[in-house]
Image (tube, rainbow, N blue to C red; front, side):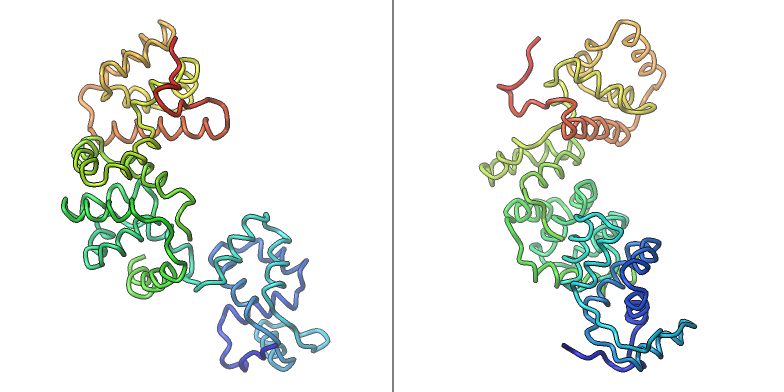
Length: 338
């Protein structure tokens, strides 16, 4: 069992970890529950790698916290101890995520959530200096709605190259993402602010769902020509606003009633006539008239606002489907015909 470095070399998270170990699982877990994710990750990482802490080091740490080390005995930090402590206040899947995270390089708060939260132009400017394969790997990790905004900013030719590489990504070795995360943290995230999904094609479908519809129409023909099989498989997994017309009317009404404010009239204001007519036909006459009045009163609307409203309806429909409250037809042969 390894021996910890001396007191003077201990960092803040390591000192906090020693304190938590002295408190024991019950009291340590209660205190850790009050911390945010960043501190939980930092302290858990430290606990898992402390090894044996000599009694004199424990006493020094406890003195700094205006405490005593009790009986003055040493303590032992291990991966098992860290996991056991987390189980005292976190659900099993959350514990598993944290423990998986700390077995690789700890890069602070969730690097991909932080990266996704940045302005899309900032992300695009950073990615312009990176290799296309690196860009593809990074954009396969960020949120689809973010990737869909960043891609057009790379320029048309490069966007197409990156999209092809993203579609071709199957599994990326863990060490590759570790290197990317460390680089982002050191060279970018520190000054500016795991695990590709089990179905890369579905992730690309989600990204294309978020793209501006005109842009998607523009790139579809080219992708169908360059990578017809791969792109065809992705298109089969896409679920767009127009696909809501595949729902039976009872399910469609449930989707329409679940969105808030001006989302529905805004989404229909910019919809194709046949799509709008199908939505309206699902409503009682009074509700239909009120919705028509709302759309008329809106006047001209921005395309981006329409896109966001339509995406909100699609997202809610998918949420209802995941909760088994509605059934989304998988293909044209599965469409409900009234």
